[in-house]
Image (cartoon, rainbow, N blue to C red; front, side, top):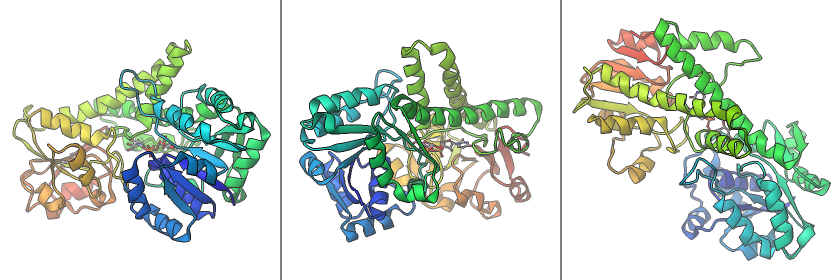
Length: 440
Ligand code: UGA
C-alpha cells in the first residue's frame, strides 16, 4: 500500500482521497481552508455526492485517512502527492487561472527532501506539466529525485465514487519509467479489473482531458443545433437522436437535447482550450468551440423566449415555478447551471419565480439569497401559471401531473430537458412544450 497525499479537498480531491483510503492506501489530504478541514475531520462532506459520506466515515474510522493544513506533515507522511486543486476561469480572460496549481507546487517544493512522485490531476493548459516538472526539480531540496506524472481525471459528478474506483481508462503522462511504476502501484486494483492504462507524454495527457470534455460539449451543442432545426420543421429531436445513435460510430450518449450543458467543467474547459489554442496560433481551427459555447448560451435564451411567447410576451408579475436548480441531477452543484441562469433571466424580465430542487436549494439560498426557494414541491407549484422543468431529477420524471391540478393556477409546462412523458401530462389536462420536438 502506498503512503499518498492529496492536495486540495474539492470535488476531485476529496473523492480521490476518500476512495484511495478505501482501497487501503494511507492517505493524508491537505487544504489551506482550516474550516473545511475541521468539517471533514468531523466526517461531513460539504457537497452532495452519493456514497461519499459513508466512505468518508469508514476511511476516518479505519485510520487510513487524515486531513491537515500543514505542508510539512504532508511531505513527511507521503511519498506520492496528488495535485487536485481547482483551475477556474481567469477573472479577465477565458484562460485557466493557474494560481492554485502554482501556489500548491510552490508550497510543497521546499518540503520535498527525499524521493517523491507528484501526480497532477487538475485540468491544466497544455505545457503546464513540463513547466511544473522543471520548477519542482529546481526548487525542491531533493532536486532530480522528484518525479512528476500527469494523470487527468474523468470522474462525473453524481458518479464520482464509482468513476474513481472503477475508471474507464487511466492516462498518465510521464518522462521517467519510475513514475509509471509509482502510479501503477496506486491504481493496482483498477488495473487488475482491466482498466486500460495509457502511458504517454505530458502534452498528450494534458490534451486528452480537454479533448474529451470538448468532444462531449460539442456533441451536446450539435444535437441542440439540430433541436432548433427540428423546431423549425416540425421534426422530433429525440427520435432523431435515437436513430443516429444506433450508429455505433456516433453513439446515443450525450445526445440529449435541451437547455444545454453547465457545471464546473465543460463550459470552463472549452473556453480555456480555445484560449490556449489561440495562444499557439490555432485560433481558426478551434473557433468552433466558440460556437459550441454560443449555441449552449442560446439554449438558455430560448427558454426565456418560450416563456414569453406562452405568456403574451410579457413576463411581468407572471408566477413561474422552476423545477431544478443543479446543473444536472444527483448533485447540488449550481456552477454555471442552465437552470439558475434561466431563473435569473426570468426574474430580470419581471417574473415572480419560485425555485424548487430536491437537493441544491441550500446552496442556492447561500449564493443567490434574492431568489425565492421553496422546499416542498407542492408548495413550490402552488399558484404557478407556468412550470419550467430544467434539471432532470427522477422526482420530476415521476411526477403525477394530475396531483398538481389542485394547486397550480395554470396548465402549461416547458420541458427544458425533453424527458417528461407527453401523454401523461396531456391526459392530466396540461399543455407541454419541448425544445426540439412537438408538444401539445
Ligand atoms: C464532465 C465530464 O463528463 C467528466 O468526464 C469530466 O471528468 C468532468 O466534466 C470534469 O472535467 O471534471 P460533469 O461536469 O460531472 O462531468 O457533468 P456531465 O455529466 O458531463 O454533464 C455536463 C452537462 O451536460 C450537464 O449540465 C448535463 O445536463 C449536460 N448534458 C449532458 C446535456 O445537456 N445533454 C446530454 O446528453 C448530456
